Length: 334
Image (cartoon, rainbow, N blue to C red):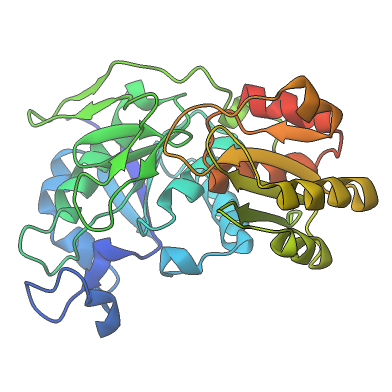
């Protein structure tokens, strides 16, 4: 008798288990306030029994835009507890797509396991015509159950495609092909023949290869994001400092260019309050680099991380050090 892999399923909410007003409700379903009950998502997928022994594990359900740092820290602890008890060979987490990429990167940096952890969501609710969540979940379980997924960091599976948690981002509000990795592409595919195929491997440090262990932490340093635009001044930067930010990510123009008034506010924040500044870009792809002038001013460059992911890494880095050169090394590594 074949012994199936064991996959834990943590349901955190999102579109994948939402229920709309009718089968054509593809946009306003969140307003119904309805979700599938415990066990109902699994019950609609008896095909999973051919792939893995899947067990649903209770966790709080929230819209992904409602998550806070404590939810992430608790999720890390829950995942480690499951693996420490040896209750699963891999874990799948259903998640709202609005902030799925942020949770994926946080787990990619903080989990201390080689076992597969896969985030999955959907762009259409469970009640919709052509709901994509059911096949997405089957594919996510396939990926989590596949031995080839070990040691690849936190993965994201949607639309038959496997992404690395560091590089993936949401690029469309409603369409099923919303998730992409614009600079680097996907790692592989959960394909139509039921096979999981990989073509790439991330070379950036992750999971067991990072110094970030948050299992015993209750909070992280505050880091805010400030967006650049024509005419932006230092008001938001000053407000972030006043609110207690230990770091600020600049979602700057082009290859990382704040306005002159923002630049002046950044310099004040660093000189007067030792607030670490990280330059990223508001554009879709490409690197932000640390010039000699930026290094002298105490800036960190985000490489090709988008602002919301740079915020995560900066917060984790500040929990260990305020040395900007050490933090820059972390950005160059992860």
